[in-house]
Image 1 (cartoon, rainbow, N blue to C red):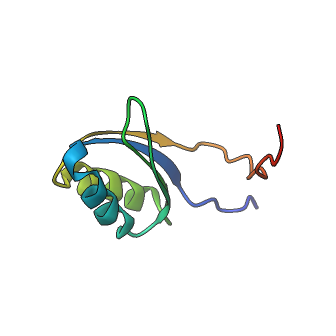
Image 2 (tube, rainbow, N blue to C red):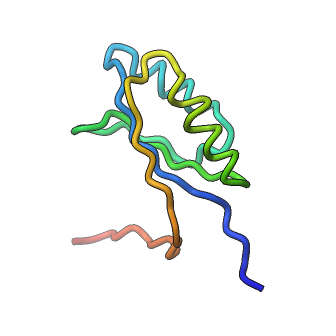
Length: 92
């Protein structure tokens, strides 16, 4: 029997820049948030989210993130086949 994999998504967020710290604090309080990073580029925040069910994933993205004040839009990238974690490279 295959091992059950918890649904994982990376969510890119555009927010009002004057409220980025506030948005990051509010997002960090949601269940399932694994990582949170401030970005420089087309998007402002990157979130790694892992929950128990696809329904929870949908509820977190559609029901919470997209309804938060100061979040302008999101792009959810859902993992379909995890390949494991890779150690950070310590030298170039």
